[in-house]
Every structure is written in C-alpha cells, then in structure tokens.
Image (cartoon, rainbow, N blue to C red):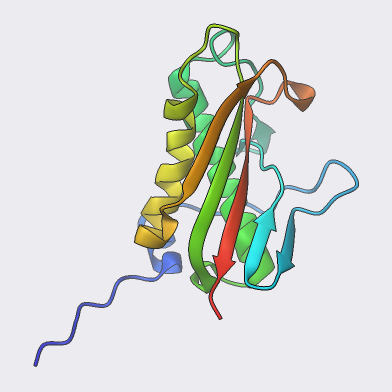
Length: 160
C-alpha cells in the first residue's frame, strides 16, 4: 500500500521560498506584538519592515502604486511570520491562519486595496498551504501613524 505524500512543513516551505525572517519588529508603544489566549495567537498591527531595516512609507495612489503596495504587504506578512515564530517557537505550531485584517494608507481615489493585501495573503498560503487560507478584511484609511504604507493584523489558531 502506498503511503500518502507528506506535505512539507511550514518551516521547510519558508526555506524553499528563500524567505529569511527578520527579528520581530519591536512595539512602538505600550503594547506587545502578540497575545496568546487558549488556542489563538493574536498579532497586533504589523508594518512593512523591509530589508535593510526600513519601513515602507507613503500613501497608495499618491506616493506609491499598487505594486509598491503589494511589496509592502509582503514585507508586513514576513514581519508577522517573524512574530509568529518568536511567539510559538516554530511556524510548524500553526494550525490555521484564521483572519488577516489589512489597513492601507490610501488616497481618496485609490481602489486597489484588495490587490495590495492579496500579496500578504499569498505569503501565508505559500508558507502554510491550505492552513494559510483565511478570512480577510482590506480597507483604506486617510492616514496611518508615521505615514506607514499599510499594516496587517493576524489571528492564528495554534496546533495543540
């Protein structure tokens, strides 16, 4: 009898994708990056922190185009992965990415919010496979702190 093919672990996929996780970005105020309660790990807002340690700034539809926003969303997702690994010890402890909320710093006529936050969603699916598929919110706002381009918030179900 044939054994079912074993799916690569999230940590293996991360390596295959060539993604190097940075150190978790330190909180900028009186809060923590993640809180675990029961089987949930809830991440606060994660910003697009790109190598070499710069934050992507600007307003989508004014200073940045959709591709710039997608790159920023990818960086924010990678920052979130770094926090998840730090909080749980391994990405393999993730059972499911449950929810991603994306907030985009957008000009009034910018309409590409979904396409921008899709890039963050794609990172989670690439790393976790079906366990990376999640519910999602993508909205635009008139400003974000320090003029950051976007931020994402992630809710994770932790494997028992």
